[in-house]
Each structure stands twice: as C-alpha cells, then as structure tokens.
Length: 257
Image (cartoon, rainbow, N blue to C red):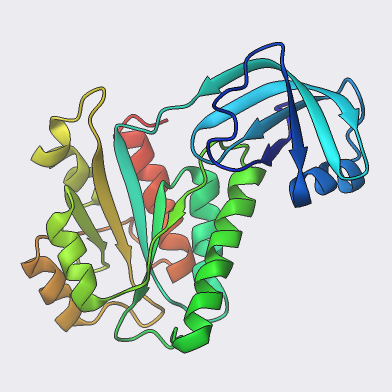
C-alpha cells in the first residue's frame, strides 16, 4: 500500500536531504496527527504540490506538528504532454465532480469555462469563492491520489478568452457528440504532439460543454481559433463524465500511463 500523503508549501522541500528531518505544521499536520493518528515509525510522504516528494517515517507526532525523518527526496517531472481540462460550469456540483475525478486520473490543470448555455454563473464575490472551492477540490483529490503535483486551477474564461487560449495551445479538442473523428484518431494524428520529446512541454486542451451542450456558435468560434472536434465513444456522456473519460483515453494514447 502506498504511503499517505500530506502537503506542504511549494519549495519547502528544496533543502531537505535523506537522513535529515522535516517538520510539517498547520492544518495538514493536525490532520495527520488527530485524524489519521500517525504514530512514530509509520511511513509517510510529504509533497509540496509542485513535484517534490519526501518519503520517510514519523519521528515525532506533536499536538500540531509532525516530524518526519527523510529516507528519500525526489522530484517528479511533469509529463511531456500536459492535459488541461476546460470544464464548463455545471449545476449540481457536476463540474466539481468532473475536476475531482480528472485530478485523480492525472489531469495537469483545469480551466473553469463560462459557456453560453451554462446555467451556473460566476459573478462578483461568488466567482472568487467558487474558484477557491475548485482549488480545494483538486487539492483534496491530489492528496487522495497520492500525487506530488496539485493541478493548477486557472482563471475562469468566457468563450472569447477561451478562443485565445485555443489559438495558443498545441492542440485543443472539443468533445462533441456530432464529431466525425474519434478522440484517439485526433490525438494520434496531431502533428503538434508528434515532436514531443524529453524536456519539451506541450499542452492539450480537452474542452467539455455544460449540460445543454456547446452551442453551434461556440463550436464555430473555437474551431475558427484552431480547435478540432472529437467523438468520445458511442454514447452521450454527462458533463461530469466526459472530461475524466477523455483523460483516461488521452493518457493511454500519449503514453502517460
């Protein structure tokens, strides 16, 4: 069984060496001590959410701190091709379910999308709170999945801003039930992804619409910016299901798994 993971601030593991100790504090330490009840000698991982992972054993469990003796400290590189889920806002927390599952499956970043047909609207104070909630969701999911990287939650985009992001991406795919080509075919045929090599960084945007689907006008606008449509299976998937399903298929096709 893999070790439980607790997060610390990005960069805080930079100067920790095998054999030294690291003191975890704050809410994560309290959770480790009071909820997980970790005891001296038990194995544990500490990750900084930006790729660094400390593997070690508990040396001391205080009331609000956890002291860990490091046996190894490694940095986990990001995939050569990064997957970004552009998730339309959806009612009933289906958007949160989508990003949670996608995080567990390995998504690298998520983008909230205020699409035309989305019933949910992020405005004013609600926008900031909703964005923070999404970050909390992906952080918890990354912890559950024992990940060293916490996916980035990028700023919310409307369709105009998304078109600009599409134009800048290596590949942008609209998951659409009327598409002619399967997602697997689109990914394997992409010239932009064929040249990916060690040390390079490419991004694929996986665009998922709301409950009512992406409007024809949006499909046209995003396609004009460079996006391609792709079919994901023979059935119509919910907004909460399409993204995670695409992550699974893309991860296999691109050799991420």
